[in-house]
Length: 321
Image (tube, rainbow, N blue to C red; front, top):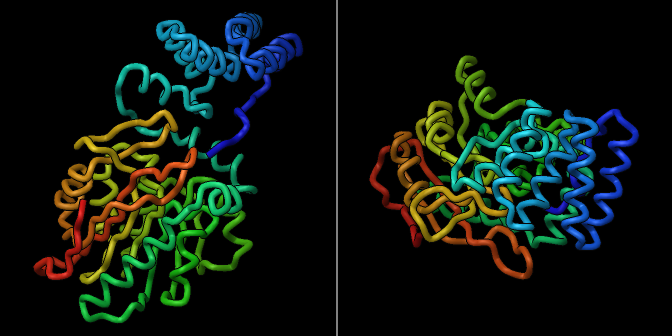
């Protein structure tokens, strides 16, 4: 996703102006000049998270990893919610994986919500909803079941792109997302019977406490913001009906673990997906390579997965990953 850099004012006019001048130099490719002005802005206003974050980004481009790490740490200190995602940049510098800061995800999608649908469908050839729908439909038909669901949950529902193909096959449709901005866009479409603004794991725990169950749970390109799928898969398993399905997409890579890409999205190896599903007590019935979007004129490697709460033999398995 391409969005304007998040900016939060320092509250100091001089510091904000230095930041603006630095942004202009940054755009022109004068990285050294931009770094100097970002540093000046941060010196004037030590709590200026946007300046610290921008300084870290420029220093990274200049190859000053130690200086970049120091700036990203200062950005985290200046903004405990880490709305810029500085912790993720620190993780990339150190080759680590960390939990996605909720404040970063919320700020990113609140900012992006108004142009989200157009950017994905027109700019990125977004295919996750169609892939999920086609795969789920094939899965249930191979099992000799009708493609009809009493209750469906759309995790990280965003504006409703993922749920739209399923609406005609679902009696009760629920969506949950961390971003109030995305939920506001989803409400306009009148797709859902229920929408919640909430962190996903907290929502799933509350649903379990309310003894709510679902025949189908989907997550369209949501887990690219989650390093480890194990806890999520286990939480979903507890909400599925005996024949319930869990369908989702992820970005992937050739390795076995989890990789934080320079896009600040996680890519999960096929082995990680299989292990998370198995550890949750689910049966993997479909795992196939498929690109859900195109970036820089190249398909982004991905996987489409469907798991079942049923422990019956995998007679409907169709895996190529």
